[in-house]
Image (cartoon, rainbow, N blue to C red; front, side, top):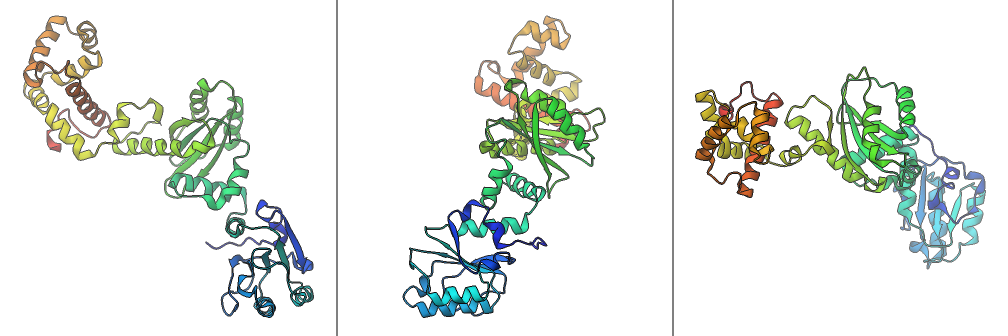
Length: 394
């Protein structure tokens, strides 16, 4: 990933990966530009560097032969390295005077650590600062990696900085989808009034923004409603998807997972509405079931009723759906179906012919009927079928 950002050695001294550093020689060169960080434990530089690298070493390659170290540093200077970081007391305890004098003459910075150093932290920091120099790019990188579910330790220190004001706050993840223009000043103002804060960035693979909402109020019970009310505006030309709430930023990956499941729901069932994961119930299960399995279950459990309704212009399928929703309460079911109880009894007798007399008492059978019905009516409600029968999908 190319970057036009410039980085100097002196800028690196501000970060924790350089705690305990000491500039032993070449102090006048600490404003040299760093193009990369490279670990070298060899004795011959050759063509291993291109110039501009900050070299990291323990000196193991020349610990027993100081003259080899002198030659090594001389080659680094000639090849245009930016400087060198050396870990002392692991393989070498001090540097030959010839190296120090050569570095001083060339204004070639020699940075030493009198403790063990995690060179990987330095290389990561150089990478971060070269490729993600602005907060906007850092947020994009962090949020994109959160969305992808990949390891984003490369920005570990930067991540701590980005989230330092939110680390212990409850958080919701949200997607805002569509071709939209958000009035960010208005959104920030509205969020503040609702005791919320947020960070946001566009994603590279979907047309929308990923937003992390943080609760600044002690009344977490109203958190979801305040987020929804902040996202919704009178002129919405987008839809939003809200993942599950988690207790802190450390758990945000699980919220992102629920956000993706809610997005799958909108795709699988062609939902054009905004979706809140915590308000999905049977839909959570439906999005986890293979499409072919769901269709097979609809066929196995409901097809006799679908065919009967089609041939007789009846409502057995919907009657079953309402009856199960009412947990077998005949009075409530008849009321919701707008029929007298005698008509309901007649329909229930017909349902028993198709499903068996135990369909309401057998918990396992009732569960499968409820899943099949939820799948059928969800697909129907989302416009997947043009008519009320599903025979054509089998």
